[in-house]
Image 1 (cartoon, rainbow, N blue to C red):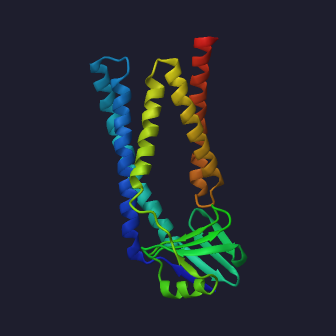
Image 2 (cartoon, rainbow, N blue to C red):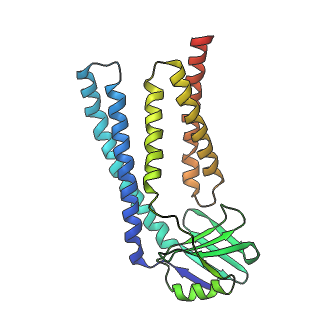
Length: 242
């Protein structure tokens, strides 16, 4: 049996990603709060009073989220293990279901330009990703090369981070329009998009073997949000055409 873990210095890149993603979410959340307040029916003075309360709470929540996010990622980073034993390859990580692939399941083994490895099976969500900061990488590559020829990963040109940022921005914008609009057609149009996208996302979260049980548990609140979308749409339909 061979066991591989991540180099401690590799966490710097992970911490940077966590801070960047949460900072982007923070900016979008604050912008969303400002939009809701400035488009409400309250007077300017009342809006200012509400923001004085809501904004510090939002910033506190964001700061706590960044701290907890880094702490959780540190624990997961330190617990990451790749185990080669017999005909099986296992990925072990704290709070995330173990993923075990038999050699017969493996279709391809890829290496990215940055040095990360991807062990792909026929099932899309049953693939093992191995960060470039894995320790004793040469020995791991040699062992994997005896299972399958390691191929270069065909990477897309450019950075796709802005696409994810655009999707998040659009979702926040649609939610803001949905909750503040008075036109029934606009409410129904944005509501349908939100229900479809949120519903699909929640189903994917529940099926993913790469997410911890705690995240799946908390994602159940997303169904509550989805039902509030549906409830408002039903009320609009009844009010307009009932």
